[in-house]
Length: 166
Ligand SMILES: [Zn+2]
Ligand SMILES: [Zn+2]
Image 1 (tube, rainbow, N blue to C red):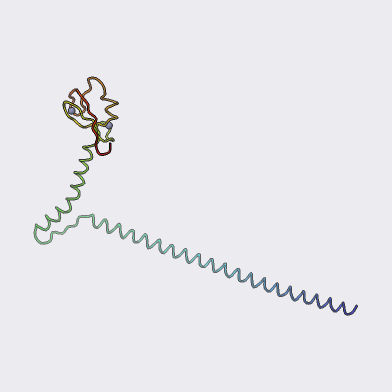
Image 2 (cartoon, protein in one colour):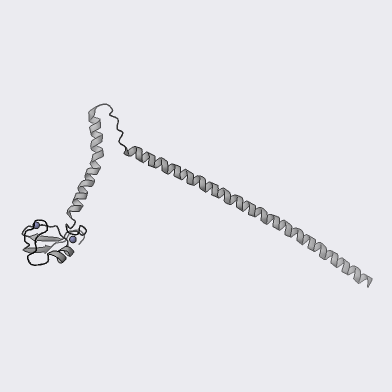
């Protein structure tokens, strides 16, 4: 009986010790968890700050770029020495825009004068005008007594021709 009592006491003691150890472990685990959470928050803040800095840098660079572009566009051409160099610069700068102009005109030339959308594909005789697309011809000019929309000469014959896209 005495022995059993001592045994039980021993067991209880061991259990208590175990609980104490467990409690300690739990506490250290909690502390570690809190620490890692704090670290995570710190990291997140750092990332946020870095992102903000990068964003600021990006904005600054964009500003710089637009400033440079504007500076390049504004024609502050100081007349240096001699008129020939000035003429040369003007010629080279006006050349690309002239090319664009002519290509625009070329495109406009191929666009139907009625809908301003489709490519022309009808030729009218006898005036030989080539200014209308097939849908517009079908809608407006495929009738007896129709007149060419470019010169108002009566259409005797209409031909469908094929261009680049048809
Ligand atoms: Zn048309
Ligand atoms: Zn005509």
